[in-house]
Length: 101
Image (tube, rainbow, N blue to C red):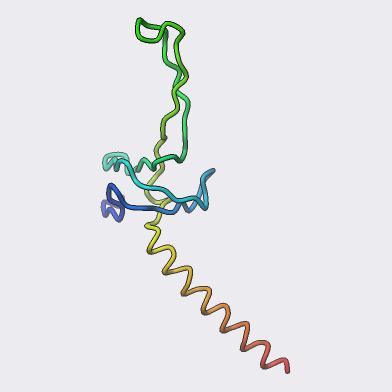
């Protein structure tokens, strides 16, 4: 579908949708085959590890899950778009206030 990648390893991204919406983090890995990214500290999953010689009690390890790359945006681009929209909204609000007076 969309073969163009706008996210690279090491970029800081803003999450647009899902449980982690509104948070940002650094990209650890980009999985091109499944069009997904792994973001540091977000979308944490619990993985149960079976008992073995190294872990005699077993363990529940937490790790980052993947997020589809359509649900993330580079943070600098997000902030640039957001400030432009806020400027337009403020200008429209001023115009309405002047017309009411």
